[in-house]
Image (cartoon, rainbow, N blue to C red; front, side, top):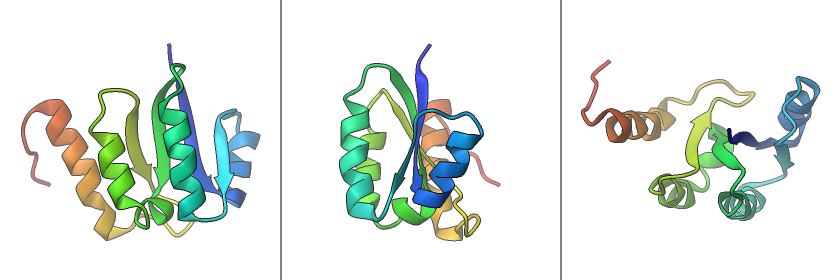
Amino acid sequence: MGKIAIIAEEDLAGFCRVAGLRNAYGVKNAKEAEELLWKLIDRADISVIAITEGLAKDMMDAVREASQRLTPTVITIPGREGPLPEMAAPIMELVKRTVGMEIKL
């Protein structure tokens, strides 16, 4: 069974580690997050990479490219600022690709 990795702002990653998520990585900016994303993609033990929306919106090209791969699955999650409305599209694309049809909410 694969592991879940989280790429988040440093303070949020710290909370995730306290909660027991060993593969929570804190970064200072989107550039650092993008470099880490490509390193994690190459790891065979990682099945899911979750990136906070605040970081992902500043590196959408890399997130889209990484999301095209079969494994690991790359998803965005709300950060400390809460869900960002403009970030709903990547999740809907993931659902559409996985389910095979578009789901209207």
